Length: 107
Image (tube, rainbow, N blue to C red; front, side, top):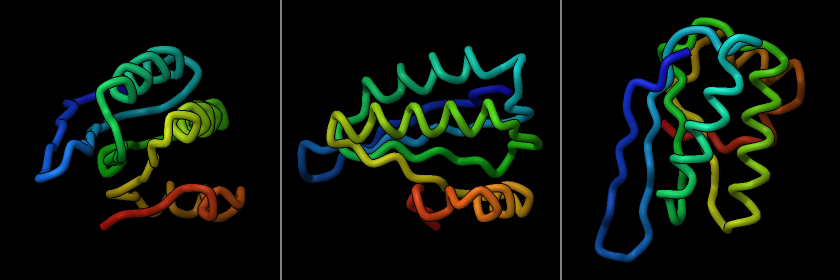
């Protein structure tokens, strides 16, 4: 798993959206690094954290756990964690596990 880049957007208001581009496998070897990088991105966001998954090639149960954990921390701070660029396998994984109802999906 690689975090390609993190981009913060500021509009006319003080709220900020942060877009994080992910690539590669999210598995036992990468979840700790992913968790830390997403928590860092979360600390720079004030309203919306968007994860672009378009270049993710695999996601294990541990990867789903990281997403859920970061979402929980985001909610505690009043921040929405949303997903975009969903590869078909990831959409199917979220649907099968029922997590498709937990994460907002943005175009």
